[in-house]
Structure formats: structure tokens, C-alpha cells
Image 1 (cartoon, rainbow, N blue to C red):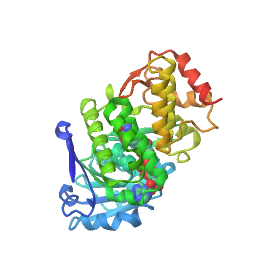
Image 2 (cartoon, protein in one colour):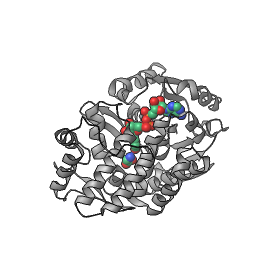
Image 3 (cartoon, rainbow, N blue to C red):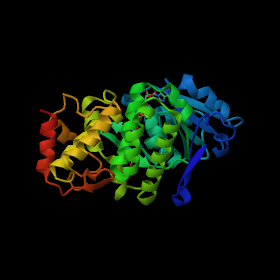
Amino acid sequence: MQTVNIELGSRSYPIHIGTDLIGKQGLLADSVRNRAMVVTNETIAPLYLDKTLASLGNVPSCSVILPDGESFKNLDELNKIFSALLSENFDRNCTLIALGGGVIGDMTGYAAASYQRGVDFIQLPTTLLAQVDSSVGGKTAVNHPLGKNMIGAFHQPISVIADMSTLATLEERQLKAGLAEVIKYGFIIDADFFNWLEANMDALLDRDALATATAVRRSCEIKARVVEADEREHGMRALLNLGHTFGHAIEAAMGYGHWLHGEAVSAGIAMALDTSRRLNLIDSQTEQRGIKLLERAGLPVQPPADMSPELFLRYMARDKKVLSGNIRLILVNDIGQSHVSQDFDHGALHATLSHFCE
Ligand code: NAD
Ligand code: GLY
């Protein structure tokens, strides 16, 4: 087991990464103060719920099983977590445990942020995407029909336990979606990691254990350092949203769940690269290098045919990065270098939208 610590003063916590961690004696149980509620979904429950409850040992615990899917990441389903907690008389000393991918993690985190004004929660991420990104950093949220992740809070978990053994049951399409967020880290901040991904993409697609462990650990290290520097996204944390302004528009406009989050982010990164090239920040060789890596990961580099420039702009105007009415984009200056900008020539953005939606 390897541990990456995220240093946030009183909100610091460990990210444990390894195999067979759910069954590891004491790892989960020792973090729980009083009673535990495991939140999971109907796909993950038959695979890992019994093991998780068993690893809680003598800790009094129960579970709530939600329907599976991004389309259920909403206030109605969130209310089911509150109903379960209230009907079991859970108090402020309880701990919620998010057993699942980013959807369960984000919903459980938001439930923990708001139940009795805030209780502890632990992330047990079971998708690649959740292990490399969503379980770390304390962003929690549910979707609104008019915008992705629009209702939420910053609330850090007390620990993250990334059991890579769970990835064995993950569908191919979900694995690839997770790789979009891994590739993102290379683009925004770490050229060496991007080079490593170019050399190891086949191993990652083959689920090679060493390559996967390296990718998860490096991603968590990068995310931890960014969140330590800017927990509440007043500055550099926005870089983690490369491709997301376009991607969130795709997810919301297509109906949540049709395009996976990672797929939408991948197409969004391709679009951000296009805008960056039009603004002369990168040359077409750098752009093509990025596109090639996304394609090798089996990810889309074009938005769905149903998207139009108008649809993009309607949803992009509601992005959380919009400040005082100005769309802000993450632009790439080179592999491993990026910045947030609102002072760009909007003609380049419109040209990107026209090009990808023609
Ligand atoms: P997901 O949670 O929907 O999981 C993907 C699918 O895999 C689901 O059907 C799930 O039931 C299934 N699954 C999960 N683990 C499995 C396993 N081990 N074996 C078999 N099936 C398994 O999707 P995701 O890609 O994990 O997360 C996407 C969500 O994360 C989006 O809502 C996105 O907005 C959010 N997100 C949040 C952050 C953040 O910082 N909070 C960052 C990135 C993404
Ligand atoms: N995934 C974006 C963030 O955590 O800030």
C-alpha cells in the first residue's frame, strides 16, 4: 500500500492506494468514530458491499443503495440518503462511506457536507476516474437539469481508500473514461507524466497492475498538490477543469448519462487544444500529439453530432468558472503548461465551436 497525504491543516487526510484494501483489517474501521452508513449503488452493492460491511467489523453500520447512473445524481436521490440517516437516528458523530464511482462519491460527499451541518465521510472509490480525481479534493455536488454539479459544497473526506482490485470488474468504456482525467494532468501541469503516458498507454489499457498503480499515485500526487495550493478554486485549481467547460455542456445538453463524464472531458480537451492553437499558444504538432494520446486511449475527440455552437454557448454561460458574465477557459501553452483565461479573443472560441459542430 502507498499513501499520498493531502496537507490542508485540520482538514488533512491520507489517500491510501493499493490492492485488496477494502478487506484490509482495521483500515476502514479505525477511521470511523461512531456509526457508519455506506452509500453505494445497485451495480456496486452486489460486488463490494458485503466486503465493505465486513471490514467495518464491530462498528455499527448500515447501508443505502441508490439507482446507478449520472441521471440519478440529483436532489431527489440525495434525499434518500438523508431519509436513511434520519430513519436510523444517525447523529453528528456518524461517518458516511462512499462506495462507488464519482457519482456516489460526489453525492455522498454532499450529503456529508449538509447532514446536520456536516459529518465525516470516507471515499472508497471503485472507478479509475474516482481513484485519480473525484475522490480527492473535497468537491461534492449533485446536478441540476440546467447545469452540471450546480448544487454542492467543498467538504473534504477524512480519508480516501483507493482499492485498485475493484478496477477488475470495471467495464472497458468506464476505464477509458477515467483515462481522460489522467491525461488531463499531463496536459495541465506535468510534461514528464504526459511522456510517461505516451509510453505506457497500452499497458494501462491492458490493466497492467504496475502501470495502473503508477498512474493512480501520480494523479493523486498532482491533484493533492494543486488542492493544497488552492483548495477553494480561487486560482490554479481551475486548471483541473481543462476540457470541462465544453465537457459539462455536452453532458448537460445530451442528457446526463448519455456521454460519460470522461468522454465529454476528452472531447472538451480536444476543443480546448483547438482554441489554444487558434490563439497561437500551441502549434498544430503539439495539438496533434494531444489528440493522438486521447485517441490511443479510445476516447472521443469530437463532440456529439447533436451539439451546435448555440447549445454549447447556452450551457457554457452557466459554467461555474463564469465570473461576472465572462466565460473562462483553460488554455494549453505547451504539453505540461496551461493557464486560465477570460481575456482571450472570443473569435477563436467561436471558430472552434463552428469547426467542431459543422
Ligand atoms: P460513475 O460513478 O457513474 O461510475 C461509472 C459506472 O461504473 C457506474 O455504472 C458504476 O455503477 C460502475 N462501477 C463503479 N465501480 C465499479 C466497479 N468497480 N466495477 C464495476 N462497475 C463499477 O462514474 P465515474 O466516471 O466514476 O464518475 C463520474 C462523476 O464524477 C461525474 O458525475 C463527475 O461530475 C464526477 N467528478 C467529480 C469530480 C470531483 O472533483 N468531485 C471530479 C471528476 C468527476
Ligand atoms: N475535478 C476538478 C477539481 O477537483 O477541481
